[in-house]
Image (cartoon, rainbow, N blue to C red; front, side):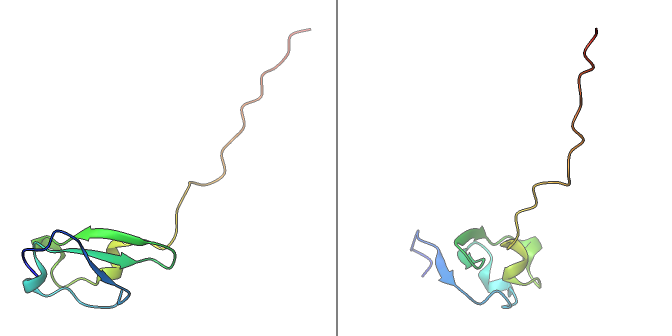
Length: 71
């Protein structure tokens, strides 16, 4: 597996990341598509799903600035 360039596809978002996964790329399913996640040393002990977000936050409602017309 170490010689392959393509990511390892998985639906198991609840899998914990062991130290053996460092350096691999996983394609983690987020419910719609697969997000590629490159595993680093800091990610050990976390879950795969933490790095493939399921919701897209676009920000809270914005205040619309009105231009005052001069009459």
